[in-house]
Picture 1 (cartoon, rainbow, N blue to C red):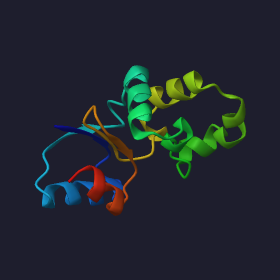
Picture 2 (cartoon, rainbow, N blue to C red):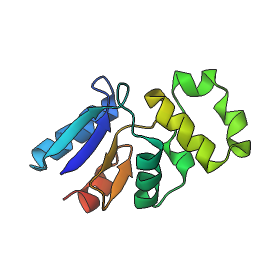
Picture 3 (tube, rainbow, N blue to C red):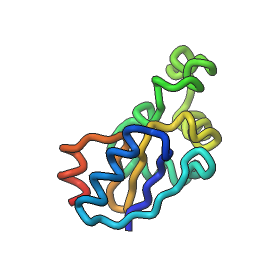
Picture 4 (tube, rainbow, N blue to C red):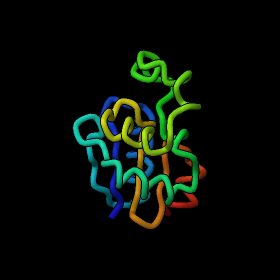
Length: 117
């Protein structure tokens, strides 16, 4: 079963939920603000998504700007980046979905059709 880390007020999360529901794909919803994935979970998800940990940051979010992460990203290690994400669900790009074999970050209908159908 898919684990869906999201936020109910997030537009991309609502689109992803609708997509999965219409496709009849069951998932467990986890509120990313209350229960962000751990550093170890995030590390595994980054590997499964086959992308940079940088792509897991919600760069348009208030927290990202307030923490001035754009300037800090080049000097942070991947371990430090994962710790930031695990400590603050608002920093994570949503939705974050995994089934422990595949993972996606954000909502892209074409990508969802390939991976989650």
